[in-house]
Structure formats: structure tokens, C-alpha cells
Amino acid sequence: MRKIRILTLVLCMAVSVLGAAAGASAEEKAKSTGNTAAADLAPNARSAILMDAGTGTIIYEKNSHDKLPPASITKIMTMLLTVEALDEGRLQLTDMVRTSEYAASMGGSQIFLEPGEEMSVDEMLKGIAMASGNDASVAMAEKIAGSESAFVDMMNSKAEELGLKDTHFANCNGLPAENHYSSAHDIAVISRELLKHERIIKYTGSYQDYLRKDTEKPFWLVNTNKLVRFYTGADGLKTGYTSEAKFCLSATASRDGLRAVAVVLGEPNTKTRNSEVSGMFDYLFSQYKVHTIYKPGDAIGTLKIEKGVKKELPITAKETYSVLLKKGVTQEGIRNEVVLQKDIKAPVAADQSIGKLVVYQGTNVIKEYELKAGEAVPKAGFWKLFKRTAGSLFTID
Image 1 (cartoon, rainbow, N blue to C red):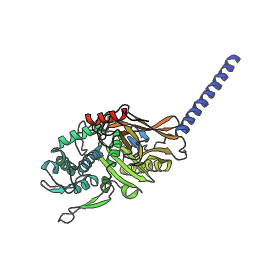
Image 2: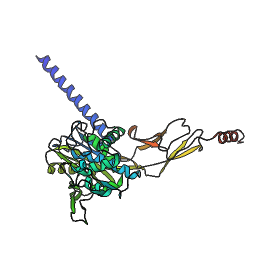
Image 3: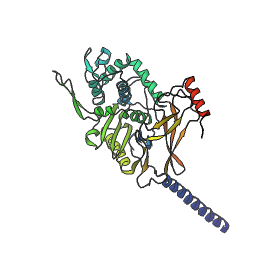
Image 4: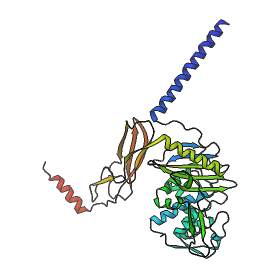
């Protein structure tokens, strides 16, 4: 009996020591990375995610890859394809959009478009972003692609291009439909992509406006996202609700050089939805800071090109390259390395991938950015290459 008691005591001591060692190891790992797990910031949401828009760093997630009905958050992709068409010159804000009978027949949230009624792209964007107009979304889809079904094909192609694995669209407005789903993670990625087009904030960040202002039937718009009025720095993006999806929101806010994207799906009511998103914003802004490595236009390095009309191509930052750090963690040990593809030969296309910028904290890789060629470099002709070769042969040191 005495031997059994001694053996039990030894085993308990061993378990205690191992537990303490494991705890110390986890604590040291957290200290080394500067990241600690956030509390459950969205306890009532079915699915949620909190992301830093600048770096794409995920701060918090809960069931973030669950495939769920996204309701009107679907319109974030609709707005993305619209602003892409504007930026590429395929659309102008002053272009008029005619409302088909099909577009006018949409139920749910709407701006009450009449069949044959025309509004500008600018007005349609207001109707989609602020009033969540299902009718405006379909009218815009038909303007861009010719039909809603063709536009939905564009939506799914864009989702594939963005590498989204949890998303498939069946319509452009989020009304309940079979095989129409997304996830908090994918919605955050689409939201981050939309925010790269700064013009969208004019629409998603406005709290109130008018449509048909100088007509007999003015329509007062009030943003369905109340955070743009009641949370400092909030300026988007999109609410959603159906009886199946419950209360959903993809929101963004900017403060002190940081931009947050928070997505919640399946919340029980608007009050809880807004409260939990506000808490997610508070957590990011109070706990994190951004460390900028390169700003747009900064020189990063030089790319050597074989057989091109240019021997070298300067590499400049096309966007802000930064990393997210926990407040209290010093920037000491943050370094970056440019890793270029070897033996790149002309022709080189504009925006062709040429390598990556790797950011380290100590020996750990904490972020990678793809580097692209800033301009096209055609292949040099025979005579130019001959002169270049001959010149190198007869150069005297």
C-alpha cells in the first residue's frame, strides 16, 4: 500500500511539472509572436471574423469557413464588380441605367424602381449601398453584363479569382435561393478587395441622402448600417437579413492608420449584431498597431531582365506594405527581404509576378507580399542585342 501511495505521488508531481512546462512553452510562443488569442468577441454570432484590412491579418475568427446564407451582404460582390467597371472605364457614374420589368419585380429591400425608369450609375450605387435595393442591384447587374445570370457568372468567376473556397452565388442581391452561400472569411476577403476602391466609401459611409430629389417622388435614403453614424470611424459596408440568414453585417472602420473589417453572420437581432461588431473594432484598435515597411512609390529594388529593351527594371511599392503588431511589442527584429524570380527573360508583361517581399520577425515569416512588374519590357531586337554583346566584348576595364 505504501509503495502505491509513493508511486501515485511521483506520478502527480510528474504531471504537474509537465503541465507547467507546456504552459510556459505556450506563453513564450505567444510572447515571441506578439499575438494572444482574443476572447470570444462574437458569442451570439453563428460565424464571425475580424481582419486588419491593410495586411489581411486575421485577429479573431469563429466558424469562419462555415457555408451560410449571406443575405444582402451578397451585394458587396455586386458593388465590387460595379466599381471595377468604373475604374476600368467600362462605366461612368453619369451613365443611365434602365430598369427592366424583372428588376422592378424584386421584393424585400428596394428603392421602388418602376419598369422603364432610368437612374444614373451614381444613384444606383446609392440605392444599393445605403438602402440595400434588391431592384437596384438587378438593374445594375443587367447594365454591366446584359442579364443577371451573366452577372452572377462574373461574381462566381471573381470569387474564384480571389481564391474563395466557401462561396457560390445564385443571384446578385442575396434573396433566398438554392446553392447561394458564402462564409465570414470569404465575405471579409471580398470586403477587403472592395475597400481597395476608395470611391466606394462615398456611398457606404453616408448615413442619409436622397434619390429623385428634384422630382415629385423624392426618396429619402437612410443607411441600414447604423454604425456609420454611431461608431467613430465606421464608414461601411453592408447589412443583411433574411429569416434563414438572420442578422448579418460586414462592417469596416478606420482609426489611427488602421482599417478593420468585421463580419458577423447569424446574429439574433440588430442590437446584438451592432454591439458585437463594435466590440470587435474596439479590440483591434486598442490592442494593435501598424508598422509600415514601404509606402506606395517607395523604391524596393531592381530587377535584371535578360534580352529586354531594358536591362533593368526598378521595383517600386504599388501599395502600402505593412505588418500588424500587438501594442507593447517593439519593432526590433522586424526585417524584410526581397526574393526575386531567377533568370527572368523578356518579354515581361506589366503586372507580371516577379517575386515577393518577405517580412520576418526574428526568424519567423509574418507576412509575404507579391511583387509585380511596374511596366512591360519588350524583348530587344537582334541588332540591339548584337550591339550590347559586342560592347561588352570590347569593354576595357
